[in-house]
Length: 258
Image 1: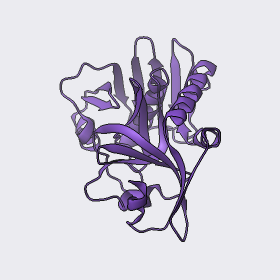
Image 2: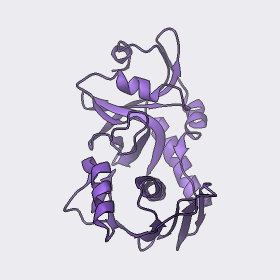
Image 3: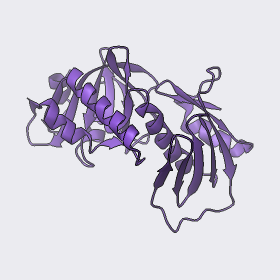
């Protein structure tokens, strides 16, 4: 099966029909039958995993990355764009691995994954980021019925030509629903905060950069890739209107946003 997120297709190879059926349901909006896969992951299923140490560790270089957590172990060659993973038949291990590999690939392609909700309204994408509890799922629930919800948890942002776009992802938060597999140019980025009243204020690119780096998902301690992510984030903020958004849980907030 081929799972495509943010125009990066991943071919997941497994000889277990039950595991494939489970992944088909989880990534149903993002499965494509025809695109040639840029990345290939071969899955070896284990009877049980060592779950004593769940801390994530990502290490390596341009030739080979080792990605491991208590519930899976993987190696990935970024040059050949091929990887192997050993895990039990659960969706969370492969889901975590896909996020990590996407973060590595996006770093080299003027993009990044952001801990943020996002939605498309009137053909424009709006991004909402903040710490856990800031209101990402709340503002997703309040979105207009005509909106395309891209995610309430992890947004895919990537430069295409001279424009930064947001893509839907299957990485869901409290809504537990995969996003729509669509994309649109980004109209604005909002840093969220719950408040008694709706209020919006502009942020400078420097202040926004300080804040956004806390919410970008990147796990590798590689100086070159870290610098690429940093420079892409800075460029994104220079090209995108950025605001601090204080809001109350009422659908009227979308009149202020869009």
